Length: 392
Image (cartoon, rainbow, N blue to C red; front, top):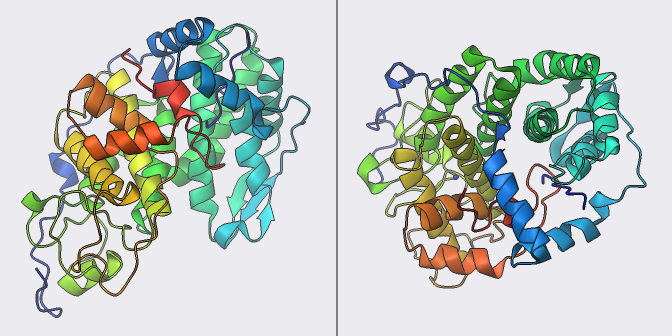
């Protein structure tokens, strides 16, 4: 059997200075492990072995999730790589010069093969590594994050579960990640929070693949500053926290950045909630993905502030996704909620509910109702298969 995983968060006078606490990067302890675990980007060997056993035994939900993945158009073995020297992506991928191909061609085949590895997956990585030189246009940083996150996961699994990837080709792929992707994603972004979160997800995954402790620490430090500035908790005070370097130094700026949400009255509200749930889902997914990689690499973030924010973010949005709650008047005043989180809850739900035992009633309903989770064609894919009820 060939396994194919695809890619598979009170209104004050608006002229006054903000009274919220800024996350201080100096307070964050670098978290690179002394020895990296491989494979160790989003999923490890024990998790892969668990999935293999469940699918081979025909057990649910893994069997259906596996079949769903294999029947998807992105899993077709008939396509060939079409790498582009310069990937150009504007708003909503317009123009789209290599954007979709870059994401889909590697996302389609780059997940683990628990019973053998398709040589086609390696051919995709080799083709792109020999061709791409950079990204351009307004969405270049975001595209670099989406693609970089998926490349790192795929390459990590193939390199450490298969012996058929030639050393020279591995070196070329390392060079691509180091020169084309890492310099962009490691800088982060002060755009909407989902941008920086997926860029840091890519940076962390690349750092694991390259065993680059400096980049790992840089990415983790920025992440520890971004998450509290993306998911609000009541303990934060009357206004959300702000990320280092954001320039959000007044109440007015913070409220504008939070999509004109004027008051903060519930745990789990996210910086993009009042924009739409789709982009909010991207941010929540990356929060969970980075926490999962960190757990594999020896630092469990689920048991602290990061886990608390992830749990509340999932629960807050799941209440509206499932219809369990009606929108209160204080939330996104004058707007309807734009629902549609997407296939995002499995990693966080598995960690916080299955491993740590939180009830998460609304998140459970949303997660189970969305199975088997599919793909968003960007950087998420088939996480019921990879992380659904996975105890490893």
